Image: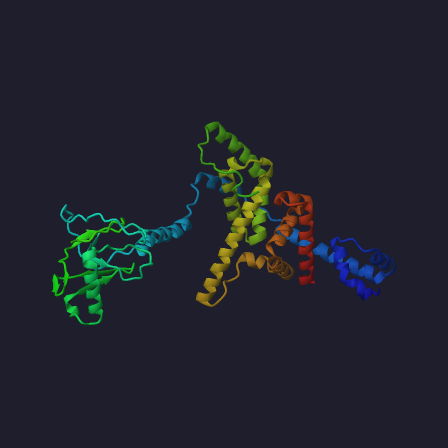
Amino acid sequence: MSCEGHRPVLMDVALGAPASPRLATHLAECGSCRAVLDEERQFLGRLDAAVEHSLQVHPSVSFLPGVRQRLTEPPARRWWLVVWLAPAAIGLLLVPRILIRKPTDAAPAPPRTAATEPRPVRPPDRVPAPTFTRTRPLAAVRIVRAERASAPGPEVLIPAAEREALRRYMRDLQARRIDSTLLRMVGVEPSGLKRIEMPPIDLAPIRIAIIGVQPLTMDSPNLGVNE
Amino acid sequence: MHEAAGASIDRPVTRGEATDLEVEFEARLADSAALAFRVAYGVLRHREDAEDVAQEALARAYRKLGTLRERSRFRAWLVRICWRLARDRRRAAKRRERREQAVFGATREPTAEDMAVANEFRRRLWQAIDQLPEKLRMVLVLAGIEGYDVREVAALLGLPAGTVKSRLFLARRRLAERLR
């Protein structure tokens, strides 16, 4: 192999890598390559010396007193921790409020009395139990399920005597055969339940009972219907 | 090796223990203060900043000395604390410099320190060192401090000697290639 073939590995040899037997033989014969290897070694030596020289610095006389002074001081507060923790804590407080939004237009709940206490009704089997609780009572007149029956969520039981009448009433309402001004929609719950506030209605031959305001809670499957 | 070697120092330290710690720390301070300063200087290359960082590293080491289970590794532990603090300081300084450049549109005036290191070869040398990956740079700087050999650097970093040797080889070769 020619000198040019060996030159690229001379730096590695200068850095301490073992020379191959072929290179060793060549170096023994070639003064030019030996000179290059020496140059590489000298260059690396200058580099090492420059690094070492740059780091041959000594601390000032006030260095050690400065350390002892620091030991008497309280450790620096981690202000950045406060900077990050405060928004995180606020965010954690807000998340439940965002997930469980309260109705913005709900009327204040009237005091609960024995007369308005909802009657416990056993839910049918197909009705899944509510998966969340709601401590704040809903001021609702009647809750009509507006979703598919298979959808999760609470369902209000409607007495059998009224169920057919209400269904026909809603069908007629949607077909605009009934004056919708009689009925005032006061909001749509995030769960898909429509809260409907109704005045006393007497539409022969359908009769919808007068419905009073009563608080309902979502934490029980026994969502009653005021008769 | 790590700053959090051992766990908590939260239990109250008795008077006797505190005195023992102080005595031990004073001995270690005399032994390792220059090392901490040079490690910081190797990263920052600014005397005042390096002193500040080294002092902080030593103060932290003292406060957590009780948690260090292997006292024989104090210097390695201190080097690691000091390196991290210096690196953080340098990054913060770079961010600040970029902000200032963005605001004022000009670089800062060279300080006396800058002029002292204005030697062209040294400037290029440290430029090249700064461009090395941190693992290589750390080995190179530690090897440059008081001429530590491979075994000493390995002990300081808690690495096998072979790893240090190969990193040092790579670091020097890259430096040579850039500076030739």
